[in-house]
Length: 178
Image (cartoon, rainbow, N blue to C red; front, side, top):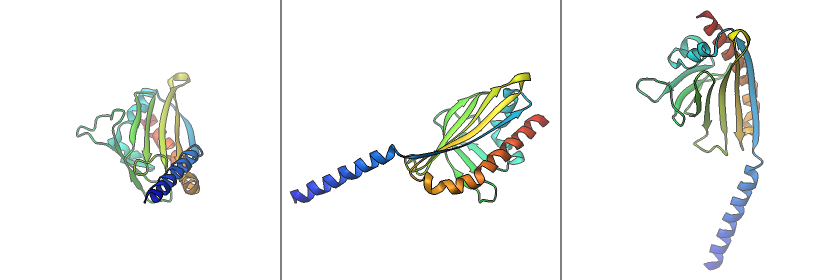
């Protein structure tokens, strides 16, 4: 019995060691897009964070909801309910955590698979930078990390960049038409 306990304990230690070593070798991939919008960061932020109106103009991120009754902007640490529909794909729902909510500058959230970011995580962000003539340079990206990235990357890289581009153009059109 004592020998079985030692073998089991050794197996657990070996497994944890392999996990720890492979965690440092996790894959990471990034999708990045930029667009200049002929409006102030304040105007862009107003449309970007008016989640109730997303179905009217965005075909990529088709829904964002907070878990608040009044639909006020979420705070860091709160969950969002998001539906994303990449071109030529079915929509997917997920509940990421807000990491950054810096008005007129940055919105960032992170979604994981079952809360296990070592398996797969997507850190999605929108950064607004004031450019010449009070225009806005929008940087829209996502960093994917975790052990499953190599298995999922081909699918992610196929349609997601086109979704980001479509979202950026739709946001630009919406903001510049107001």
